[in-house]
Length: 262
Image: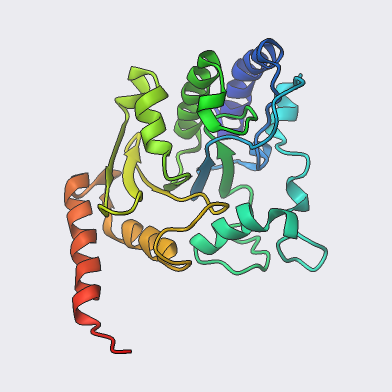
């Protein structure tokens, strides 16, 4: 049986030439974030954005090895003092805050590129997400990302962008949609829980945008979900609707019992 790194190489050798061709056709560059070349076992967390933000124009021609090595600027996310660089504060710093981390480097967990992978559904750059990308780019993006998930086998997935599940509903091929379920938890807020290929998945605001409710609620929402959606022998204990009801009951309990007077 092939190792995870061997599977990733096969994956890249299949998709990167296709990305190169599309890059020239649609005049748009592409890249991933953290180095997949650092992954040698199943990972803890997969953090997925929509796509790299930037102006269209130009094209990329990468080898599979170059793509797997990740964003050339990835190591610059930390300053010399080991804290998040200002240039990366909104994206990396905000996401780390969502997951309960401070601004110091933690190579044993969130900053271990072999255990936490940062990527996007589409590696192609644009300023308007999927609405600014051609149909053929969107299609291969979903297919390649789902295959990547099947290789990495993360324990949990964090989607950054409150509309990602709705984008999946709108743009993803039928065979992709069949492997994904999701539900909105709070009526007034676009926060979703779900499963991708039976992996617990939470979908929240992108940290560079306006955060839901307060600057501390999103971490609460994320951890409440991962504490609630329990698995036994690789299978969820409860249906997703039941998980949603448990979460709503928990938030209601806090709301009614805390009874804080100001």
